[in-house]
Length: 350
Image (cartoon, rainbow, N blue to C red; front, side, top):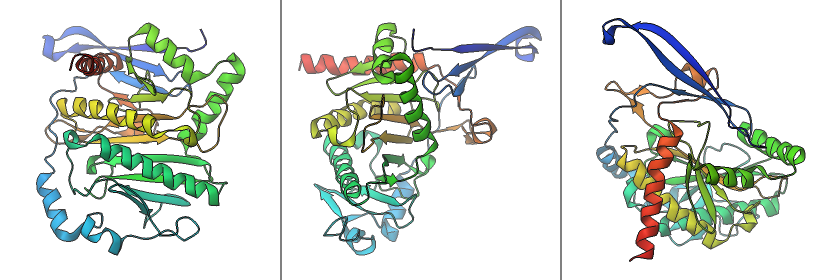
């Protein structure tokens, strides 16, 4: 089999004071990413009841202080693009607007606002909000590529809420185009190319087929994309959406993006149900084709642990570059699959 789902088990033996000092063993799984070989660890450590922050009070306070992304301030205090990128300085589609990031992450760094509301809880996003937001970000990346074809490493990203790195409550996307790839882009582009050269088949297409056949981490699919849970997750959960036969930004039609938006709403409902109120999203959309690569999106929810608000990210991730997860991917996939199936059942029997 071309794709290998490699897992190694480590067992820790000790005398357990919670079991009257009886001998006890606890397992750690070390999983290897089938594409890059990077490892993640699955721990036998109960995630427990999450205690998410209530952002309503701080949201209202920051709105009253004068949010730069709210409609009454947006066009007065945000930067404008040079005319060579956009003649009016900003990209617009419906309520969605893209403008340059005042504090950029790279050569081309934009911010996409897709709702006039300052605070949008997870269960109050709409298909139109998300669709317009991703479409206007696509418009921006296409324009940048026309004037700067060397900035080929492109992505649309989302830090939702402060726990995920958002400095402003108002929902917004980060639009990035740079001539230098991120570590993730460099690794996955290279590994997908090598997989194709070595096996003669596409990694992402094969992954969809294999995960659907096995069923353990399969979530669902539609005409546009397939959803699985990553075998070696980069966080507590790592939900992966792979677009079928879509290699570049230009091949992303409005309907394909709209379908992703519909699916994201199901995922958001699952996160809220499980008391997650924050996430990071990466939408990897190359402007030029790369052998074996596919446009894909990853969503990783963020949280804190326990009553003192312990960070879920510790030395293993920061210094060893090894993510830890307290829940098996297969369990999350099973729960999410039920929600996708429930939605399809409702569509068939309105």
